[in-house]
Amino acid sequence: MSDPVFDESVKDSSSFPVATSFSDDDDIDDQAVDQRHQRRIVLMQSLFAYGFTDQQADLDPKILVDIRAILAESPEVDVLLMRAAPERPLSEINQLDLAILRLIMFESRHKKTPKKVLLNEAVELAKTYGSDSSPKFVNAVLGSLLIPSTLEE
Image (cartoon, rainbow, N blue to C red):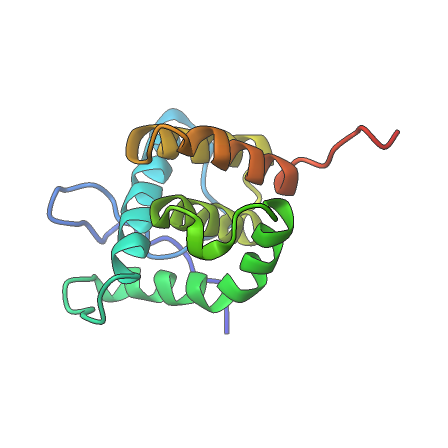
């Protein structure tokens, strides 16, 4: 099974490029960054919605491939999340925050996107779509997972 890749030819109803999967060969320029941001939004929203319904008919089949890949890795990611935030059981984490955390952790494992960029993107998604406490929580959890602490030195 090969790593999934983004298919820029797929569009959702709002004409934003839709993430169909991830690849390591995205160009880093302003347009590509914006397209990746839009893809992450669609994936985050789809991952969030997927958690509430068994109906998958509304999802683009290529988006569904990504959602399934993220969910397939979620048990491993969830263990990391529980270690990073032991005071917050998964059942108590806002479902949108959980979707952001899983999406960004999945991307960190399958792309060469700098960890600080992923952390910033997660915080921006949390600010835009999450609760008032989401950005701080997402930043703390992903910061501890993506950017190793230098306190041990």
